[in-house]
Image (cartoon, rainbow, N blue to C red; front, side):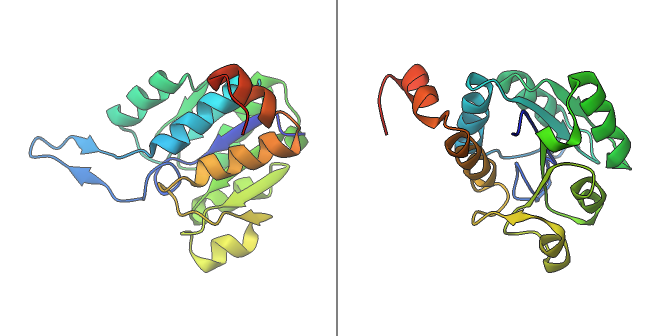
Length: 168
């Protein structure tokens, strides 16, 4: 039933570490498997949104590369952001999944239809999620979620065939 996949960035798409260069620029690493998963989600017709408490040029660049529809940065309260995204997408909460990793994400867990915590999230956060990934944030957790959603929706085979011309 998921048609919109939203997620935090730091600690979900990244390992949560923040690197600063000598000029004060923020550097982040993103796992290529997560990027491929997002491309697969888009191929299947899912829309994606990123919501972060921080702002980063690296995030904006990666979001543009991947075609993420909504990117919200410097967000201090994520529930208004997810509600705004759901309204723009014209999707009910039941059609929205959210991946988070920290306490700021827990209120969103109670707002969407499917709440997911990454394996590296603190225990109190994992306890609030409907599902906990096996993979840590920044280590393919987003791909894990997307693969499972596509398989459960019966879209996996078609997406793999369309994107890669093969069966898995």
